[in-house]
Length: 175
Image (cartoon, rainbow, N blue to C red; front, top):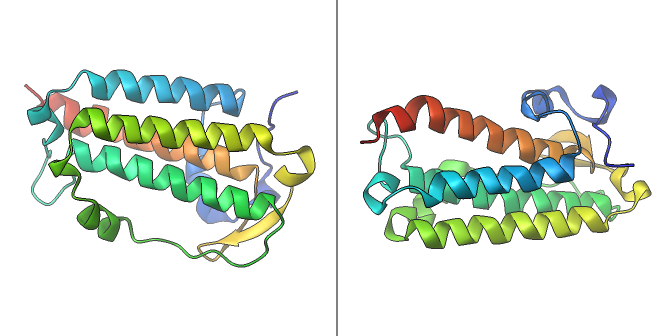
């Protein structure tokens, strides 16, 4: 039996959009398939395309890929802490500050993609290691309550959201 989708009482309403964006099915298999999707999309871009921004002040595609890596690591850390029964409230993070500090445009797409692949594979390894009891542990992240089993779905939904933005706003502008 695979990981079951969280029920509404397992998370604060603020997480609902990401959970809704997560596709139906085995979360761990979907995370692997999404890794393959991100890899195929970004490995097909040139360095110039990686620097593309669809509007002034928006992130480049390289910034977006770095953001996916940062978010993946933060989500996995939250899952680890909550799954191990750590009830210490976990803080949020300011994604724009992270993006500025990361300086993704100075890195190659191959390097950024390898980073995301490593982060996602580490998340998958962690998720596979958690027991049924660990998945039902409750914690607080960014002022919102959730169970550990929400995290893989939040990661899926978060990445799905950004892939949709890439398809709608970035890819049409690439030459």
